Length: 445
Ligand code: SF4
Ligand code: SF4
Image 1 (cartoon, rainbow, N blue to C red):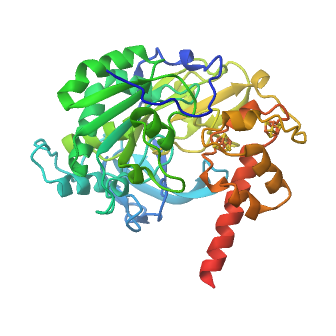
Image 2: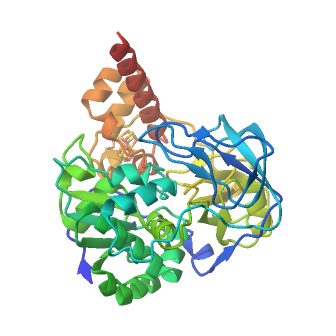
Image 3: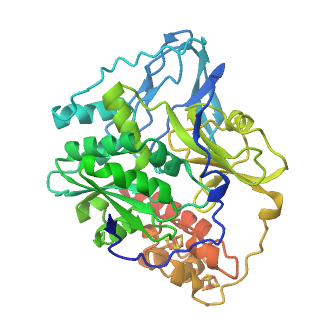
């Protein structure tokens, strides 16, 4: 076992992180539904192009949309059946998104057209990389960045370290915890495959100390894959890429730069397991483990759900609710997004479905900044959060940019501490959108 090299700046640790609601519940596969609504654009980058038509017969794992560019990813059928209508469904960001219906035939026949690569240790890195791309794998920790792109750093960037992100520092979420505990070999195999693609041998798995059973499991098996487990002190947002690199290796990613500029590639543990399935079984990414939790949920737990399953169906699997939820969030309470519809389908990056009780949802009134500095103490990026927020409130986006607002992780650690209940993250998101729009306009001139 390796020890944490550095302690991250700032951050928070909520007293009750809510993980005990579901951390002891084993992953259960969700039963087959009659219909799935698969959102077409599930990743950062170019939207994929639909390659099937209503009425076409498809098999489970068959590609139904192909990548729309290099930074893009294909989408696959979650079961066998018939392609239904192309419709608009509520998306996780509050706007409708285009989705395609897959009407199940009940046979659940698998045929992805991708042959298993059993001898992956002998396979050429390009072959493995191509497989990861064809399987539609994206970052499953939340970012949904195409994994193929992350594994294709420019030749000038010298990568020597792969870090698997098993921190799962968001309160309430336990999907990665259960995956590491129950499918350690898949996680480690995926890591070894990605290391082969990158041409490196140094693999670390960063995992927070609040998952002792998963740590023990990984520590037992990691030597078989030439990987090392690094146990991290519990601290949110340690799962941020830059924070994890610092905690695990002691390296700092230079300001405005990427993990590859510190010689590192970071991948989520769920992504690693998906890579292993894609290579060893020819299985594309059409299902994932997601946590369904919160006080109103009758049976909180972790489910293996297919992409395109409406949240409402997942909640039914968890026994429904015992009280009226005050909020439904996709992801965790810190970085997740509140939903106005439970018809939003599960996507490749749906790490959790969290219901907060009405008693937990407190409406605060934002007050003027009292310059207490608590936000700055908590900021893992060492930003002047309060000052940035005041500039944004006064529409001084240039000033906010000068204070590095674009480096903000939107982790919410500042807002968590703010006694004036200022909407610090919302301010940052607004500023980022304004700055990006302004730059896009300038580039068009
Ligand atoms: S300013 Fe950004 S990075 Fe810093 S604590 Fe707030 S949300 Fe997190
Ligand atoms: S924590 Fe809130 S009140 Fe205190 S300095 Fe930051 S923004 Fe201002």
